[in-house]
Image 1 (cartoon, rainbow, N blue to C red):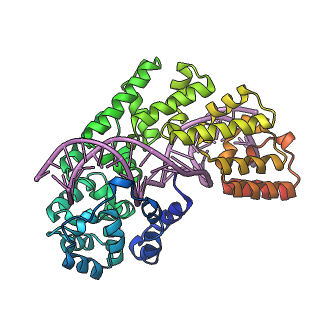
Image 2: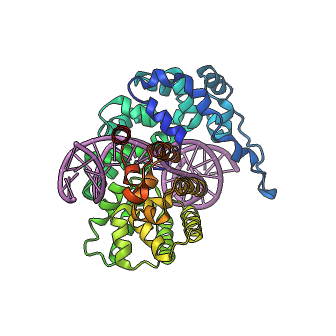
Image 3: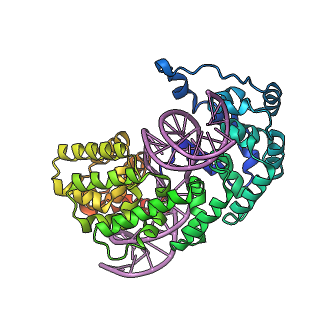
Length: 382
DNA sequence: AATACCGGGCTCTGCCATCATT
DNA sequence: AATGATGGCAGAGCCCGGTATT
């Protein structure tokens, strides 16, 4: 859902031959992301960290350097690892190598999650087998592992993984659902069973609270629509429900209906984000003369609109309005907002060129695949 | 044949705080 | 005390096509 464009672009490269193609990308990927926050954190007075007694393990550092690991990054992320007397960097690297990861990929993985080198090969072999219960190929695992080393390496509790599979299956999720979960939200499976159970119990509670007559199926409905839900806090979800209820004056049944349907996808938004996006949408709509009822209608029929950040939404709406489309039309056919601003503006231009009349013919033409749109233009051109 | 309706496919990490463990 | 394990957080969309309808 919230994939950043760059991430998505990278994903597209992850088709066959991923390892080779990632080659050039790794260094650039590695460096920029994480430095700023940490470096900016000024030591807070008395809490200033004194140098620990144990010095770094020199030969380990040397080893890592030879492997191409970004030791500076390791020092920032998990400095304790560098002070350990015994680590498994060679064995871990060999393990990953056997699974098909090239050297620079291995270096990137260790740089981003140094604790990986404290795992034993036996543990990794086990873990690999577990992941293969859900993924069909080693390459599938490698793609996720490379994307998110932390998800793969963070826990030393392998049994927990199995327990989670059992639990999730018991909710009615099938292998396809699990595959999707492990692909898109791998952290779900490193969550403790207790944590996952807590969220599921919470969802059932919510359903009952909202007057649903079948609370046991509710978690499955939400999870299969929103694979991220299990890596969120119940607090966040609760806050979001309250925000939506209050800002839209929703009844219990309206809320229930929303969350069982497309609204499941916005349950896990950062609460501030949800609030802000709502406020800016409201502001925008009021400015062009919409009523409260219009706002409610729009959000209920197309909750994903609250997922769109302030600036993106603003430019998208401006683009449509400038193109001669009215807010009323958008409220009636909100799906046009699913398309990128660039896409929309390109289509508007095309349609303007052929003299398309939105008043007359509506705006559905914007909500279609590229193929269909092109065919449409061709017909209009003829 | 063209359009409308609708659901589905892709899709998320890396850092920090706070426990528990040793 | 230092390290390990775990929970929580911010950030934030786009596109396609099957099938019913007209």
